[in-house]
Length: 276
Length: 348
Image 1: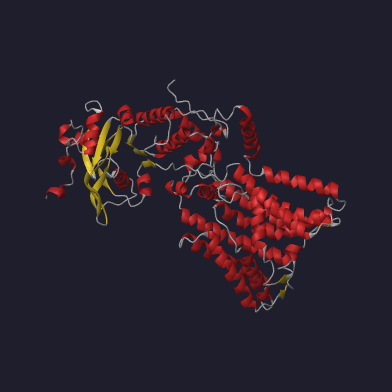
Image 2 (image 1 turned 30 degrees about the vertical axis):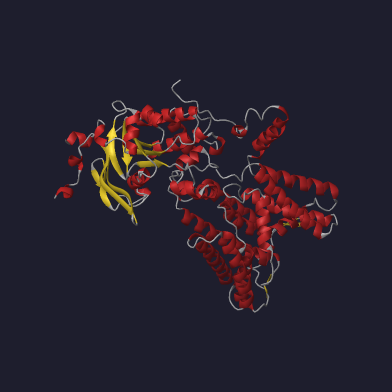
């Protein structure tokens, strides 16, 4: 029992979020294993975004609990989540196109020169930032001519690669990607998927929100199916067919009609007060 | 094999599609590429224009190119040039300040009126305090109440301009203090005076250039001008940085007020009425994009010199001042046109 829970990078139980009369999420559970790629799929309006926002501190849930490495945790801003080691790549590409790659990698977390120049004159250590950015990009197998290149000179896929690399560079535990390939062509999508695999292989847990089933089945270790504001099922792409995933997503198939790939039973993860 | 080939491409290459590259359509595309390569640096255009202006007037008139006239051009530049430094900051975060000239004038009359009975240093400090406070109110209205900068500062322009006249009851104050007018003087080098004001202008340009290019704050200013949402998602406190931009601009307006007292030692509430437009002109001609995030103080320095040298040169050539204004207007449109043509106006 303990081993199942300790294999989790992040989990959540009973998450609920209402907006006025609208219940966006009700009693939703979530689990993410260490070093896995977990795809989150669901129909439009199923509440995927609400779930992700709750996990990253962009929304504060009305009920339920989020755990990181088994410890209960609550984020009140996205910055809290980042400090805890969770990085998010948003759907609207959050890169400043006129800044260069290194500047984007370090935006909001710039490095200053050591000594007087940095402390008194607040001078940036551009060389060091470029070096570290280049190192990081190389480590992820991204070939960029120079990190002092403006992001606007890059193609869509390269820009996405910069965004993913930044998340991987700063995320110590979890990287969340919100439809990272939505605007990309076939070849570029392949490259970004390769990149996501390498991020996982470096030991990070990846949450991938996607609308593309072939993409999900190509890359995911497990698939979290979200429906009507809660988790309907977690399945493995190896044991469940694409058509069944779609069927659960749309409600054509009951969640117990597929083989569950849950690591921990809800009971062992649930906070005690739920049963008291 | 394993590594995805995300090799960087040349600037502009992605906008070339293979079919357009064939035939007559290729020519403009190639020109566009060339232009992008050189004009990727926003300073290239203004510097080029400045050199052309200097060459044309040096050849066209006998009185333009000499040390005395160069000193004069510098002196004619300092007020608008200093004001334009603050304006540059604001334009970099996609804002605009129509009140900068009025705030500066308020600074001059506050200092001028206080100096009639108080000491000069306190008078100057008061001017700084007033300028920074009024500029900060702009920042507050724009960041907290989310008024568009154009409207917020248009309102502030009217209020401050009228306020300065009410405060002085439309009187002017001659400046008798040497300290308040010190920026108009300076060491002589033969027949040429290099004023302290010119030196201060260069110094302020360098200081702001350093802040924009070498500090995290500067990177964030550019990032916000480029994409406020991207900056926010990366943990940049956009409200705070934008506010700091407006407040800091106030410091430059105060320096401009001091420059103005050095240039003409009289604090006149109805002076410098179109200084706001002149400062915007200098910023835009200097290649800073009105869309934000691109440009900088080097361009503004050149842009100020372009406007002043053009005026100065046309005067030396004996051309009607109305033609000077037409030339300046055409330059503004050219500068913004180039900005658009190079796709800098595109929001990514």
